[in-house]
Length: 535
Image (cartoon, rainbow, N blue to C red; front, top):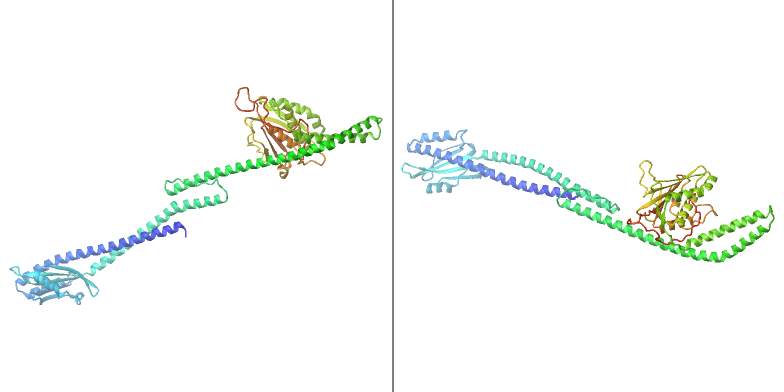
């Protein structure tokens, strides 16, 4: 049973008991009032009859006394029986109707009235019939007691009036009970059941992990105080949850950095061993192949094979150099670098490659854009990697657009970018956002999560080592910047570089010129990575 239903029933039971007790008391009070009124009426009537009978007795006219008694008892007079007793309490005259046939007055009442001369009025119930009788002393001319007068009235009217009063009170109390019951039900429903229902639903939502739910109650009673305390507890729990999530993310980041360090250590050992074991034979192979090519006459059939050997040797040497550069720390020498000229030089450098692949390469930078704080060589290395990857991912007829803006880009109301995103690093304040966007095939969501992992590549075998974006990430984060990739399969890819903006001299915040924020492990090598499909 719900608490609201239980409370309603208890209140109704209490109200019913109180009203029943009140009705009983009121019924008894009404009964006493009616009896008292009737006793007073019988007393007045008895005194009037007493005077008439005393006058008739003094005139010594017995027949007149009998006629008077018969006339008084006749309907509709309120007297049902009259009896006259002499001094010895012998009945000398009487008149009555059928209602008083079995009614007997105690002899002691007559004796007491004859001896003391007091008038006695009583309400009694005999044989299940209520009645009121008055016993009055009769006096002679000298004031002595000459007899006793009995006046009896059957109080049927009193019982009818009492029953009618009880019925009226029962009807009134019933209506009052129904009204109170409705008021109690509505009050309990509005003031208790609904707020408790909200509290229960909110607690259930909390149990399912939704800590944003609140109880909206504008009340100053205990339930309102409970709702306020609950909301305060919810806010504290939400803050604690946010702190736990932040701590968990920080811990995951530390674990990731530890794993990255372990990978770098393994790669460093591998690179050193490979460079030692493979470097010398490669140099010998390259030298001997170069000697053979120089010794061959022009248009010799073996010249093409020798050229292939030299190209593959250079490729292996480049891979070894990437491995060594990935594990070799280098501190960036950051200084203010204008973004516009850097992007213009990059477009000029890669325009021939873009034309061969039939891809439109454009750049657009605002004139008042602040400079970024970066190492020019490392910044160019980052942009070369990104644009080269975009060229590999964009089919003929596609476009690659380079742009830069002051601060992080805001959400677009016209065409919001809902593609999946992955970010590394924290966006600095202030920053300049450099965007490299292409219209290529995009990156599947399951591969986007692994895009920054070393040695992960989506290019064909032999076209990339999977170190390009890992190197780019480390360079950007070494400058205290952030990198974000938004991509979806069939919808192209956008790479956003959040680079720290260079402050004016004396301006607070930012990174000062010449500061080396973090270590990086790369040299300015135009090492390409896989993206595209991208990697």
